[in-house]
Image (cartoon, rainbow over all chains, first blue to last red; front, side, top):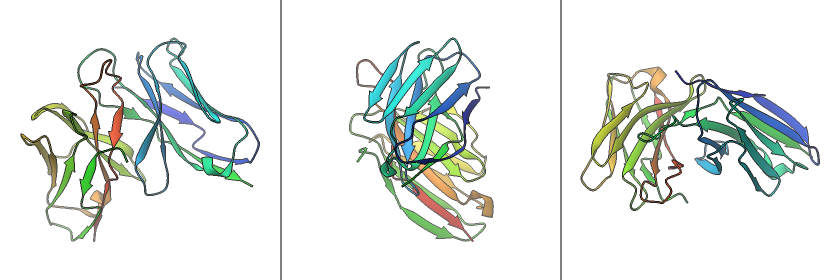
Length: 113
Length: 116
């Protein structure tokens, strides 16, 4: 059974600081996704990582994937208040077929002025 | 706006009752996924349909059922409701028609179910 672990689960950081969220998963996969969720809202897709060594950046967020270590990171650079949200990583099974994703528990990020 | 439409947005009902949640996927998407989000269980995959047929099943209770219709919209039926069924239910669709298919899921706004 695929398990996805995120840490930390809660993160309070000051504006302007850098931090990294970690996502470990238990079985082989080459499909890793990051989503953002604001309170009571839908999940917004941030990054799709489909190969070992993949790195994607959007604004102050950068995501990477190491399939050998079964690890993805979401790095936040110079945080701003607008980044406050819950961030989920999700892993898909390898191979063709169903694309149901297994989600981590999420990291609730609070950026404090 | 992801293009995935869910109704109703909010639903309050009593224990023992039955409700139906509806989802319209993005135009052209053949796959529909249902997820349940609760504080204690997080985001749990329930079931997937592809072009009208069940494709994968997750942690879906026997009291719950789903189907996908010829026009590709899907319904999730929840019966004999219990207090613990209170949650946010999300529908997502995936772009199987895009090349390459990244497997990215696009989520609707969710249906918040409260069982009293």
